[in-house]
Amino acid sequence: MKIRDILESQQDISSELDRFIPFVKQELKLSALPKIAVVNSVPGAGGMTFGRYDPEKETIYLVSQGRHPRDVMRTLAHELVHYQQDQEQRLNADSGATGSSEENEANARAGVVMRNYNGADPMDVKEEINLDVFRRGFRREQTYGKYTLIATPGHFNLGQKFSDPSDQFRIEAYYGRSLVGWVNFERRDDNLEALDLVVDKNHRRKGIATAMYEFAHNLGNDIRPSNKQTPLGRAFWAGFDK
Image (cartoon, rainbow, N blue to C red; front, side):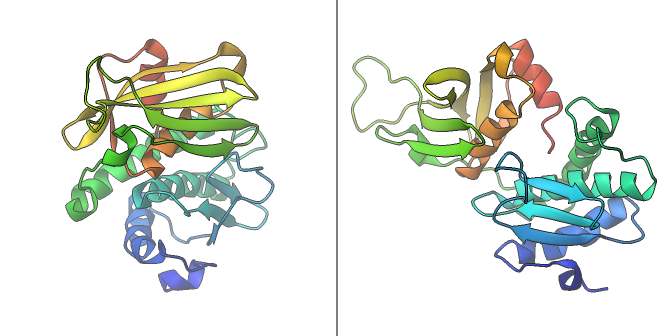
């Protein structure tokens, strides 16, 4: 079967997926593939996720618009693990919950797939940052379910020239007018280094941390962890593979 036969929609990401799908199929040792629908939003998810596997339709819904190709691939690999779990009759109604054994497996195996793919196709992994995010006046907003994510430059040093960029970049999460989470990044060589990550305890396990990291990616940045991270940041980074 040709790759384009299983892709329900054709967008700019298609050429990237043409290369990635045979690779991930082999990595996961899949004998067949589900239908992959590239969509603007996952049906019924309310904008709260970038991908979902529907076992009844044997279809993966995949959001690509405004995302880095590698993030789309990571999501696809994650959902293909769920597809495999379904084929092995290991998927249930609670499998998608954060912390479930099936979800943890999908996170871990998708991470391995991406590391192997990056090694096999180094032309696809040139690290980069978007310098605009460090400049005064930069501001972007993104809605994540009931939350609003706001991206701005970090602090500027006293006496720093107006035209000089900051060395840091920050994303905040708001629930209404209440600040419920944030993550700070620092510019290091050709990528961002993730520093502190904070999410209010009453708003955890809702995907806010993942959404903030994905937002940073979607603004054109590669991210690596830092030894300055908070315990929450280190725990999150360990599972940041979807």
